[in-house]
Figure 1 (cartoon, rainbow, N blue to C red):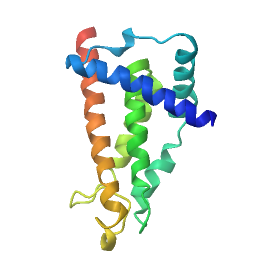
Figure 2: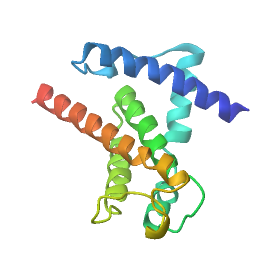
Figure 3: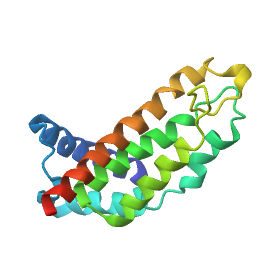
Amino acid sequence: MKNLLCKLYLAVILSIIAFSSWAQLGISPVKSIKLAGYIGKRVDQCIELQTKTQDLEELIAPFTKQNETKLWQSEFLGKWIVAAVTSYRYTNDPVLFKKIQYAADGLMKNQLPNGYIGNYPPETQLQGWDVWGEKQPCMVCWHTMIFLAIKMRYTLLKG
């Protein structure tokens, strides 16, 4: 139950932070916001103990093996990327930055020549749960682009 509450706190708080900065569309640095008290402590714990400790090899493996026929493993990496990019926007943590880069690279290395990024073999691609799973690599690409735009903006502002 604690794990579920941790994820809920993180999702709600970080979504509020992410969407409030989107409204400005100038992608202002979120690092100027720091939550305090019980909620702030819980958000920090979720980032440190869950987002940063995620086994990325486990999330990338389904895209490398491509041997699934009926499950939806491809969504897990997409969901982690969403949480990691949002967490990075909140913390500006260089360790998290490297993990996001690693995850995005791991996914993109497994893209097939026809553009497919997923965990199903050719004979069952885009069938069953794979159709659902295909949106997750798109989310990874979208959030990685946002992540890189934010990083570039920070670099230009500091420069």
